[in-house]
Image (tube, rainbow, N blue to C red):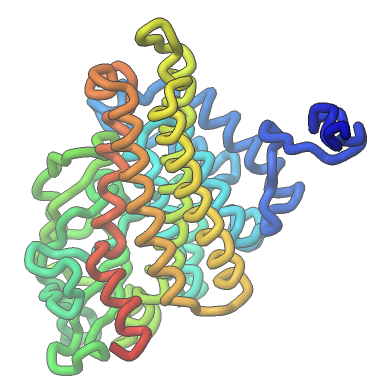
Length: 406
């Protein structure tokens, strides 16, 4: 009796059966043709005009003309209404910007731009008066004014309630501000700062107020340019506010509502940061994949060894899990939900995966990965901040845990 299996399995598969195409470029459902065109436009700009300067800007910090150029191209106001000079796009446009900026190979530049587009200007658009929008938001979208955000202090990081910067109302209606802020991105280059202060130290979370403060105002001191492990292309400042007098019209939003204003802002910021983490990890992954196909050891490409192949498989799977979490949560956020638990999860997961991937990429490069020449060690140094900034891993875990009533 003959065997029922007399031909290779491949021969029994009809020619028109769909086969996996691992090279096909996929698109998540949150992105439209418009977003893909935008992605192509931003990516071309970043690759042509920013990436060639990556090494130089590690030593000098990136120049202010980057903001002006991005303003000219319409990249600083993608999701803001056209009446303020924006492009009238949606939240997903901001995700595209964060992802495409990673092609600059400069985490510091990416962070400096993100602070401007997704941290400092959103509260002005959401809570500012029309006069404030005209004075600050419009020129910010054009790249004519650079912004910064002042939350962290020498003695108040994760514990926002410990903020000591005080704004005291004067008899004439003005406020006088005293205090200090640290780790302020764009602190040395910014034209103004969105400043978190305490106006009522006895009111708990109801005692915080935001102010728009011009950085050339008397009493504002840019004390020190801070030296960092990574993000060398961005300027990070220690700032002092010594009897800085501002009018009542400098209040952003409502007096006493600053804590709630800034907590809302942090949610959008964390999602944008998470998207940047995944894209940054992907950038390191792609570079390392090319290296693994070129580098030979023991007569073979190192990517052909099972141990290396499995490393790439693990990294790709983890990145995809983070990417899908970010996109799904972004869809909910963009559609009016306020999923703080899932935003915290996405930020935590994406930041951890990014650092893990960058570290593994260094390992695959071996000694070359430890050298500046290949840019992989810089990717790790730049990505490492994401587990600290905009909410540490520990704070994210606590937010998630508390959301379950623990």
